[in-house]
Length: 66
Image (cartoon, rainbow, N blue to C red; front, side):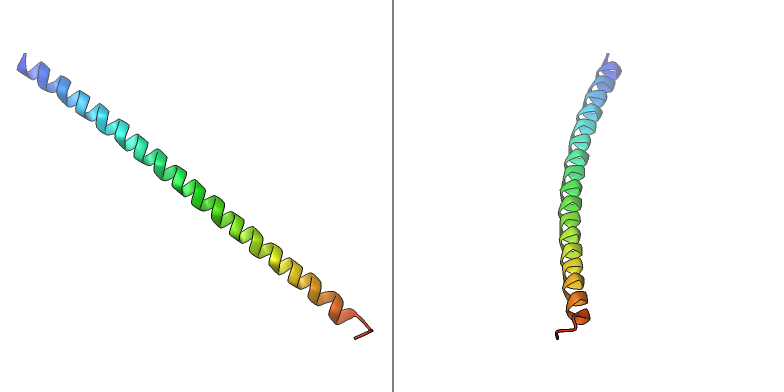
């Protein structure tokens, strides 16, 4: 009886641990996803700024008026 009880308690403990770990990993994944999204947004904004700068530069240098 005691051995069976011990195994059942161990199984319960492992199940709880697994659940908590799964939750932790899920939260980590969400955090990483948010970080990735923010980084992606930052890079896209940087890219836009660079493209705007290059667009501004090219016509001004090619303009015969200046």
